Image (cartoon, rainbow, N blue to C red; front, side, top):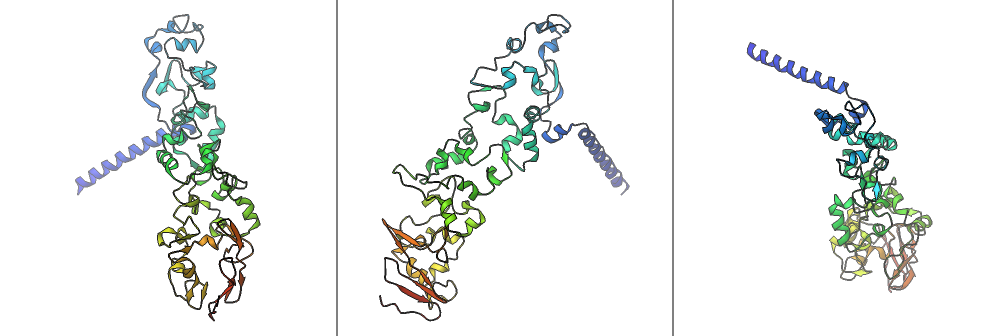
Length: 396
C-alpha cells in the first residue's frame, strides 16, 4: 500500500508539473497567439542563410550589416528567391517591395521567417477588419479559421484577391466536390448558380452569424432577395411566379413560409424533383397516386390521403368518406396543388387556391365554407357539397 501511495504521489506531482508548465507557456503568449494559435512556432530559431553564415555582404554594403543594402527589395530578395510578382493580382506588400512586412530578413521564431506565429495573426495585423470579424462572428468557414492561405496566395495569383481559383464558384468546389457533381447533374437547376456572383449570391465565404454562412438571417429572406421579381424559368422564356409579390397579396402563409424556411421544401442547390423540391411531387395535374411521390407527407399525415373512410384524419369528408382520398388516391389522381397553394392564399381557408390552372385554362374553384363542410364549383364539375356530420348527396 505504501509503494502504491508513493507511485500515486509521484504521478500527481508529475501532472502538476506538466500543468504548471502549460500554464506558464500560456501566460507567455500574446492575446493574438492565444486566439490564432502558434502553429508556425519553430523548436529553434529560423535563420536566413546569409545571416546564419555570418556573411552580411550578401545583402549589405559592409561586413557588419550596419550600412545600406546593396539594392532595395524586391530586387534584393529576387537575387536568391524566385520573383513573387509574376501574376495578374499582386498582394500589396509584394507590389510595394515590402518583403520585410511579413518576413524577418535575419531570424525568427517562426517558419519561413514570418514575423507572426500564425498565418491568420500575420494577415490580420494589416486586415484589421477581418480580425474583428473572426473574433466576433459565431460561424467561421473552417478553411478561414484554419489559415487564410488555404484560399489566398500571400504573394501573387491570377485571380482577384490572390485567390487560388475564381472565388465565385471554382474555388468553392475545390473542397465542395459533392456540390459540383450535384449541381451539374440534377434535372431542376437553381438559376442563382448562373447569376454573376454564383455561390456568393447566398454564402459569405469567410463566415456569418447565420447557419451555412448565409448572407441573410433566414432562407426565406435570402430567397426573396431574388424571387421578389419576375425571373425567367428556362430558355423558352417562361416566367417564375414573383413569390415576394404573391406573399404580399396572400397573407395566409403555409407553415414553412411562416417559419422563414424555404429550404424546408426546396433544395437551393437544385434537385431531381419538380421546382427543386427536396422530395418528389407529381409534375403533372393528374398522376397515379404513389405514397412515396409526395413531399407533403414529411409534415402532413399520410392518413389524410390514404384512408378511404375516416372520422379523424381530415375534416374534408362527406360523413366518413374521405374527400382527399376521392380526389387524390386513384390511378388518375389530382395532385395537391390542383386545389392548394403551397406558399400563401387570401380568399379561402386551408390554403385553397382562388383559381387553379389546368393546361392553358385558369379557372376559379368557387369554394364556399359551411359550419361542417362546404362546396366548390370548379370547371371540372358542377357544384358539389360535403358535410362531415350530415353527408350530402350530389346528383351531378
